[in-house]
Image 1 (cartoon, one colour):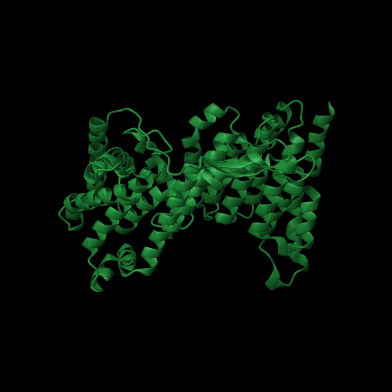
Image 2: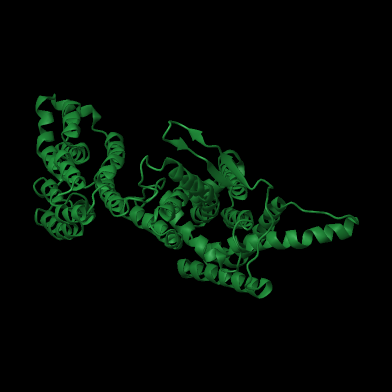
Length: 515
């Protein structure tokens, strides 16, 4: 056996499943020396023991045993994240990557996930215990810690809450990352010293594009929060906003030159407010014509009607644009002459330097536009009478009407504002991406993911959700072993986030619980 494989075996001895088992049985002894009012629940102690032992071996178990005040969700999650790098740097030096992969499949992995998911829910039902989320926890636990999850849940049948789900999901993610590091030791996201510059560059790219995703998603969540419907025309409104900006910049300068007798050049920035005004009017007219009868009770099956009518509206917009503009890609001039902003290279030690970090100028400008508009919307909703009226209508339409607010006008305003925000995000991105009539389909899919991630009806949730999706896509594409395939799978990474949120927290990051 070569020295690298020996290192892997040693790691299994000082951490991993063996010490997780020790922590499982040792940690409940903490309560024996504690006053009754300070005792921690047995389940919490068991979870802490498994995490501490799996992550840091005897050190983790000893720390939590002698300092039980450290048993907090944040402390344990940070501990797991910190140990990812240390363990991956040991494992990537294993000459035969099949050895740790095979051991992981024996000690945990899909097989144990299937076994736990089959056994534990049945056991809960036989004991007439609360089996809510047991199937999900069993599958996550089997994948992350193998048969240990059966030992944790079999005898005491604890109630599975969000802490359980987050803990088991984090351990599973750690396993996946470690296996990825073993199989791809030369990947830029794995190489020591943790490829800080590369990861920071990818994260910066994700934050920039995620801010624009957020602007579009904010419009969608505003419509949903007030009207209770999902606009299936949102992607097409995003697309047509870019085209309105393009044609205004293409012909507006010529028209002004003819009127003034001098040559006039229009900065592409002016395309954003022009697209906003036009699409605001489009959205208001559409809502008054087709959605108002639904809210007045003139439509029997309102939910189905809203889906069909907004889908039809988007269909008309897309194919009308295709007939007028054609299928050829279009793009406007740059917003600013600065091609990129650069954070210069900084030497930290003789062997390690950080930087440079580059952000494309137009993307940085689009990010600023998105963030400014979102905060302007938040100010409007929080500080103005009309904004408060929109919020009141979203919470209780009848109560809002009693106080003198016209819900019909609020419906129109919400749809027009939401449409306008989608158009402005399109106008901000047309200098960056090639614009075609079907470009909205890809973006609206991301918007649905962002709205669910942030929480339905939450504007701050849409902002943070968009940034999270942008970062996940950038890191997923950048860390993929094949960069060309990684770029093609960007949407798949967002869908993984979508599935995990539905699994672990269906209300989203900022969503409200509904009784």
